[in-house]
Amino acid sequence: MNDITPRIDFQNELSGLFDLSGQVAFVPGGYGGIGEAIAWGLALSGAKVMIAGRDREKAETLAAQICEAGYEAQGIAVDVTSVADIDRAAGDVVRAFGAIDILMNCVGTQKEQLLLDVTEEAFDEVYQVNLKSAMFLAQSVAKHQVASGTGGKQVHLLSVRSQLGIRDRGYSAYCATKGGMVMLIKQHAMELAPKGITVNGVAPTFVYTEMICHVMENDTFRQGLLDRIPLGRIADPKDVVGPALFFCAPASGFVTGQTMYVDGGITSSQ
Image (cartoon, rainbow, N blue to C red):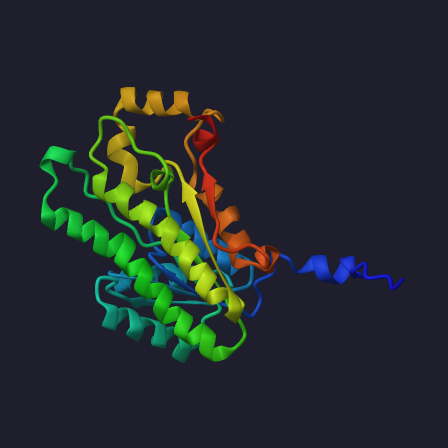
């Protein structure tokens, strides 16, 4: 009988599991509280990073800081509510770095309105920024990745609100769009798998960033949140970086269509 046991050169094959040297990462939303940490993580892992967002100056400032530290990064503007501008930005990444190996989508917004007060304008804005942009960022990047023939990675930043509602707060648009992204990831993973492109999501709970300062200032809400998190603390931006890098790295080569909940155990306990 033939021995079909795979032979693994552990020293060589395992040494580069988290090495992103030579990879090009496109990071829309990359100067936000979580996005900035992920952009740094990508650069420290060897990737060339293109940071993008509505504010070109913020994107370029962060890119300059990364470059000053000895890594490679650039910043560009992108309006993720415009499909044409998404396509233009993706083209800019390819023109600057020659490829897009990784899409790390950190775009997101929230307009907090209770159900009885939700306006069409606010709902549409959250939908456009969170869900519609994810669709067309994925499409635009996939076109370049498929054309390259070398595979690739697509990663979207979600939230535990893709699985859990929240009491006493107005999260209809946010929860609906983040939940929709879970299924978008699964479908894109199925369509892109034959091309060697993996698609996954990272879904944190509340993370200490500027976006949630108004919530954390409420002592009652903050303590209630801490009481519900089995690990007993709020997430820090760096807590999200490891899972994000895993999905961007060779280590996740056989993982696709998945959403990892980075939540201190909340989704396992409710």
